[in-house]
Length: 172
Image (tube, rainbow, N blue to C red; front, side, top):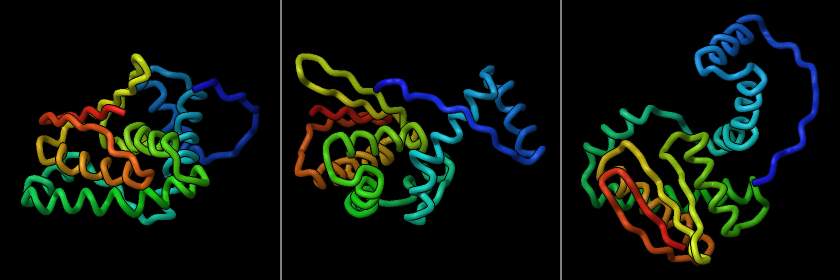
């Protein structure tokens, strides 16, 4: 991914928002400029679509508890259903069409901005491997794997999945 050209703009923000950003930048040991850019990118690449599709943000521990309370077959069905509809519209709204790149961008965004998992991607000998590491346990793996499988079905792809207790490896 190439580096985007930057632009200089001036904005007015509330003092409370400024103080919160300043405190967070200090906590993360990054510049205020870097933090503000991250916040704006999160909105531009993810949060504005989250609002459009009425998605909700819940903590990982809460989601894990919901998954642990459900039977495996219900988790599989929920993953398939969740991966077949909303991501399709999400990708279309963001990219304008369905493609492998749109699917990969969506999966990367779920990691980067949705905090569902850690997304890692490598390419070796023209074979792309994606690893999704998470903290949701085996039932989380089931949900995410069936979600991702349904997302790939939107572009008529059937990658190979290897499931671990807290990870999913996808071979393209």
